[in-house]
Length: 230
Image (cartoon, rainbow, N blue to C red):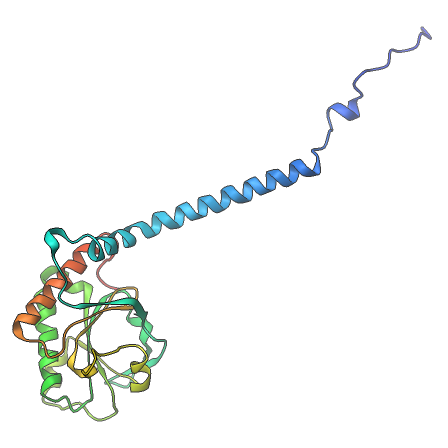
């Protein structure tokens, strides 16, 4: 066996195969991955929100032929308050549970005077006039006291969602036009639970037709993301 010395390697095994990256390189790679993750998350959120944003842009900004809405747009919109309400059968629900439909809302005490009766009638007529889009809407009457609703009008309320609400909680959400009362208006709430439109007080028949056209435009603008039912 030869005793000749072995040549020394210029590249020791431990320094070529198992080199570790520098701390600076690791930090830069982590930062890059974090930035890319955030960008991907932002892109997903934008893709999900795009239909909603586009529909509202179409309605609020793009108005072909100079068309103007009849109802007053509420800006900024106001979210359904997180309060407990009660239907005529005594069942309690949280008001935000109404999300998922377009709501046409009226407000009055249980006695329901002539203005109240008129609004209930117009609500029904407007929504029935929407045809196939009726399933995307809901008729809501918010009752502001604990008195009994007259029995003679209850048969006509079968399609309505009649809910008793604390008037103080209601006043922090819906607001009438200056010099008017809540009971004189009809209000529109979008499927996200945002109050976004108020129709003029004491609607005439002609005004009700214009209100229906506003609703039709809203429903068309939201058709890409809004579906019937909750």
